[in-house]
Image (cartoon, rainbow over all chains, first blue to last red):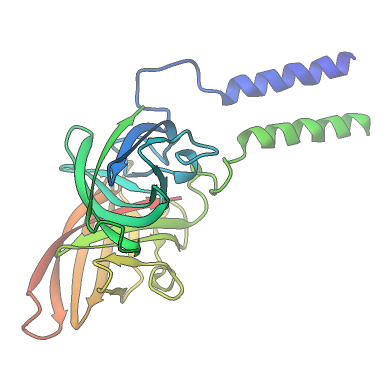
Amino acid sequence: MRRLSGIAALTVLMLSILTPSGAQATTTANQVDGTLSVWDITCDWTDGTTSANPPQTLRIFRTTVNPPNGNLTCYGGTLRLNNDPGVSFGSGTIVDRINVTAVKSGVTCNYEATWIPLDNGSGGFKATLTSGGELCPNPAFGHVTLVFH
Amino acid sequence: MKHLGKLVAVAIIGLALTAPTAGHADPNVTSHMKVDGSVAFSDMVCTWTDATTSDNPPNPLTIYRSTINLPGGNLSCDPSGFTLTFNNDPNVVFNNSLTATIDRINGTVGVCTYQATNVVLTNGSGSFTAYRVAGSEWCPASVTGWIMLTFH
């Protein structure tokens, strides 16, 4: 029993080491919240994971945005992110590529947009249809907002 | 022996806690000798993921083009009708925590071959000017572009 409690204590200790300490107002948690809209489908998520913190060039891991691990919630249809977008913070902020599968009213369309400049964390883009039928508008317009924290 | 078993159990708990989220190699460890990248020039954008490198930052390293170019790599370009082929294995040295230098990038688009040397990245990205080294006079003499790399 003693040993068991010792192990429990050790586990708690490890948890405390591995868990970030409280809410911090700095951009050091490798996380990103965002909104993404394409084809009048608007989605948002919180606490997606990134490979680094700004101003370091980073990737946003789609598995931490899309359900089930992420909490992407959509209105007017559904979007699924198909790539890990890269973001660089040079003379301006650039998102290298966003590839999404959009589903609305039973119609599935794949769209891709590249090299999206963000101004103060948000930017509009024109997405090209990469697969889908005649019911998919081409191009579709989109918008992305990213908040790193 | 019992103690050993418990130690192993604790170690497994520790491993479980530090394990990456499902679906991607640990995003926070830059030790897999891989690099994702994007390069943009002349209204064209090409991206790739999981190319292989000879080492991990901050050690000097080489990016192997056979793991960027198709079919060994997954380089994909927009507009999709264009293809870019890397003709050399770029070497990257990390000058400090802020900047890195790519010694040479030589690439062919269609019938035009361009080369940029000493491309400086700040925080993993940077602009470059690539000069035509082969191709007809229809190929612009130089193009400016932007490249971003994320090592993992």
